[in-house]
Length: 209
Image (tube, rainbow, N blue to C red; front, side, top):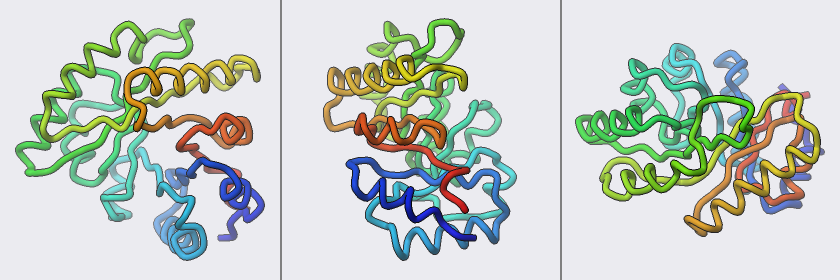
């Protein structure tokens, strides 16, 4: 599978890192992509994003570089911790406490992004007002650590709304944890994310030729 070198050079010329979306690829293609990225683009690679537990088990990738982004189910948390080191979609205090409990029992650890609701037309995720409550809990935990903020906006938003999303996440990061990271953007809007200096940008379809 051939990589989009032009896109990767755009990342190299920016301050952002790429999170390669391999969730739709078979194991052989995933391993091929990883080998190419690690060999030629390790300087801009945050690593890869998967979201289906059964495929994660089958691919059996390096846990320390595997990120999980999707709706979290309580019954999956044990496997998420076992196979992934980073979760981008934490939005539930019950799940947060379960991550800490299971990670402690496994003698393991997990890093998390809080998934912030940047689209008030949608229910769910973490409202800005609830951020301090999550932070207070995480600061007291030994096996869960905070990387910072993540979001997923609806696919039909316009450029102004997308700019507002990126700016809001960056401002929240600067307010609460200046050394943290913002995870946002997709193949559709990665150019704008690079312009905004989003720390970690998720790219899938446009990464592969």
